[in-house]
Amino acid sequence: MVLAACETQPGKPDLEPVAGETTRPPVTPHQATLTEEAEELLMKADDSDTDVEKRIYQLQAARLFLQAGDIRRAKYLYDDINQQLQASTSAAETEYISLSLLATEIAVVEKNAPLATELITDIKPVSREQQLYYYSLKADIDYLSGKPMYAVDRRVQLGTYFTDSKQKELNNKKIWAALSSLSTEQLNNERQNRHRKNKAIIDGWLDLANVMRSGQQHIGKLENDLLDWGTRHPAHPANGTFLSSLVDNYQLDISGQKRIAILLPMQGELSKVTATIKNGMLSAYYNDKTSPIKPVLNFLDTSNEDVIFWQLYQQAIDDGATHIIGPLDKVEINQLAQQRELDIPVLTLNQSENMTSHTENLFQFSLSPEDEARQVAELAIMQNRLRAAVFFPDSDWGKRLDKAFTEHYEYLGGTVLASSDYATNTNDYRRPVRALFNLDQSDIRRRKVEDTIGKRTQSEPQRRMDIDMIFLAATHRSARSIMPAFKFHHAGDLPVYATSHVYTGKINRELDRDLNGLIFCDLPWVLENNSELETTFTRNWPQQAALTRLFALGIDAYHLIYNLEYLQNRDYAFYSGQTGNIQLDEYNRITRKLLWAKFERGVPVQFQPVDIHSRGDTQTSDSQ
Image (cartoon, rainbow, N blue to C red; front, side, top):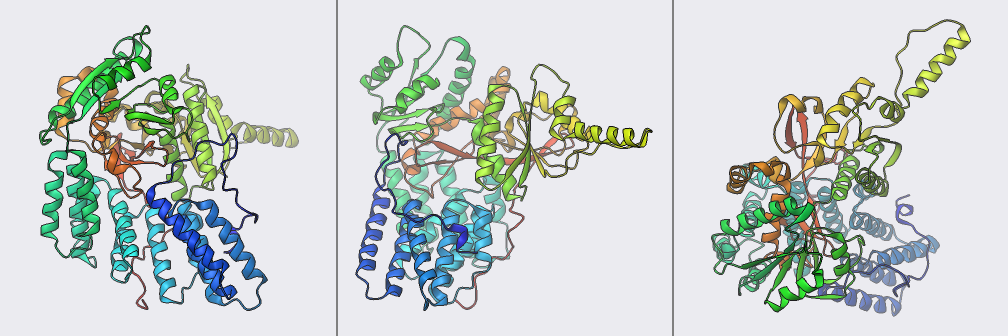
């Protein structure tokens, strides 16, 4: 059963691009090296004297393909080894264990935490190598399951057993990824934990994460702060190759003056949006007191219909721009995404329609509601909510959120059992809510009983009982009426998940008390901000309060220019921004990990979600 979980139809993998296929991301030098090493192992497998030796090389090659991001070839090798074991009459138990571990790693790389947890449960590693592999996967599953500090604890302990320098480096990168995924508040709280094993090493990691987090927004002092950390932690596992890579990156990034052209519509219907984003950028600029050489900012107006975008793009380059922020318009971003390469790095403030296009030097950054819907799906699966109902407005925005949630939720193993839209021009949600919960069917059944027995009955309509969560796509105005409608129609016990749109960003106990119990994701800027920049925003632009998240977008856009090099091609790298914990995906799109909150007594209360499946064990085996 364990083997079958990852089994696919065998066949030679198609390694050439298919006509009409979406653009694949470029292979990084590190991925190319891993792929080359895997190919060498496959040649050794072909020259092996025994079937056992052949399978050992194939297993090693599959793991390298996974590290290189080539899941397809790893799965092909898994199928091949599986077939060999099924046909063999002399395969040892240890071979089945190794293949089961590979199946688990494939599930981890595909970010399927429930499957990975299921697969690893019955694995009993035998050799020392299998034990190290097993506990590394346990740490990966901890991280996927929303328990990054469990992963850190486990990996710090594993670090004392690794002897190979590549294993140590990979282990350090995964510790860093787990720490970087924590919110600033969580990082500070972890420093107060006085009872954990390996406290000195973990405290050193926490200190380094705090140094990096502060320095990414004060780039001028980051190099010195990193070097200072090295002097304070001379024997720490990170004080070597890992620390050097951090320092080297930012030495390059601050060596010369940046000239940033900002291409945004200053007039017309988007002028208020642009004004708020611009204020965020300028506030970050004036608050940046540590950069040895301040960047030059040049704002260019894209709202003039007589001047096409490419003219402004070329003008920015001719004026000496080293980076561009913008545009905001999807049509213009689609044009950029159709190019193979851009002359200088461009950070757009929206996303192209092609989610898998790749253009060299193009980075796409937005407050995408679809991304939020996908994060809701991930949290629901993490909390074992596998049967959903979706309630969304009959608008383009609502349909987009419904599609994003449903596709990602079902990809992760959930099932959407009910879906209903509601009109945006009414506050009466009774009919679509009743349809969502099959309450009309309950009334029909009651009437049939009355017709059969010839008398009226006393009964409460029963909602459908096969769903265990609701995804609500709604604005704060709609949500304030929809949540009471859910409770009135016998669904008060069902957890309701939503995106940031259900919260205005300002506490209003009176109006939001009807939202009690509602779980939603939102920006750090909204849920935990008490910074100087927030004070600046509130004092200077109170009329833009409804656009507060766009102000945060402007702040992050300014700082990201200095952090793109660090984020690019580093799957362990994060930037802790006002709009979320930021990473780049393989297509250079900004992905943001948001914070979670739940309304209690009309106030959003932040919480850290944890996978309810995962056990609390953090210790590796003594047999290591």
